[in-house]
Amino acid sequence: MVHCNIPLKFNTVTESVISQFYLQHDMKSGSSCAEVVRSVLLASCDGSRTNLPDVNVFLDFEHAVPSESELQIYTFAEKILEQADVLLEDVKHYSAGASTEIRIAIQQPNNKDAQRGALDILSKLVMQIRAYYDLSQRIEQIIPLLLWDLCSGPLPPAEQLDTLQATCRQFARLIDFALLFDTVKMCTPALQNDFSFYRRAMSRESDGQFAIPLELANTISLFLACPTPMLSALITATTNFVASNSDLPVANTTDTLATVVQVCRFMVEKEENWERLSDQNFSFTMRVMVGAIILYDHIDGTGAFCKDSPIDIRSVVELIKTQSRNEEAESLLSALRYTTKHLSDGSTPKSVRALFP
Image (cartoon, rainbow, N blue to C red):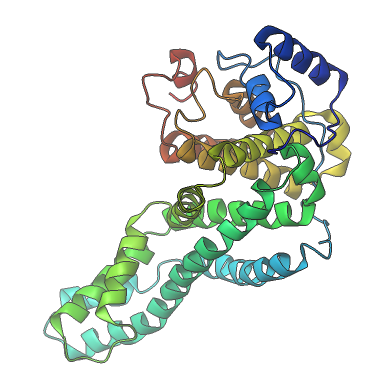
């Protein structure tokens, strides 16, 4: 991704574009491949990048097997993802939580049995909520390790992703989990209501027996206050990765994320790929595409929506609207509208902002 003495394989269109770029800019052979590829990606810019070449890579998000060099990080991520699967099912069944017991306790503030009954039930639920928070912290730990392998290699982004399919699979599964968890969380107000009642009880009864320390309760309260806490963990981990690896060009990470978006688009947009995608994997790939755009928008200086972005937002939105079920499409478009950083910037074309009424 950084050095130019590595033989690169491009399709005919890409080779032609790169040749024209060299001629137009009189670049010498010592220029970096990353600069060339990025400049090609930025060659057009009105929100519909019709001359952006396709990335003809198919990522096997269902069955990719780790190579020997990937095995350690893959296994580490797998343990986190196994827990994520369990907790996703757990939060789906959280339902009303302790809403009934809390209502009774509020209506009968002097009834010690009602107060104790609510707190007994809440003690168990609070441990579930703590597990969600702990998982977000583990995600923040694993994301930089995955990004380092995906972004720091010597190959152009598409080839790097193709070479590290199993690593990319784990990264994609974490994006998918974050979006799915946050969708459920936003539809489960009892999570925040239950925890708020419990924390108030802790503040009132400083000498009481509680499941977690007050300081941790305050931290978890902030975690729950965020509408999309798992996605926020991904964003934090990604921005910290960029900030803490100053020797790695930011373009390595942004180009990798932009390529993930392109690859996902290629996978779901091209009819020849449909037989290789189950309905479940099709939706999975759509979510990964959106998640990668969100991460890109938070670490690129000008974001994913400006004229110079390598991401074809107009085509992404059209794909979401035409290829997703109504409820799923609404969720994905809301994620782009409300969790990105630069959509409302003055540099975002009006035609792009109009895609998100």
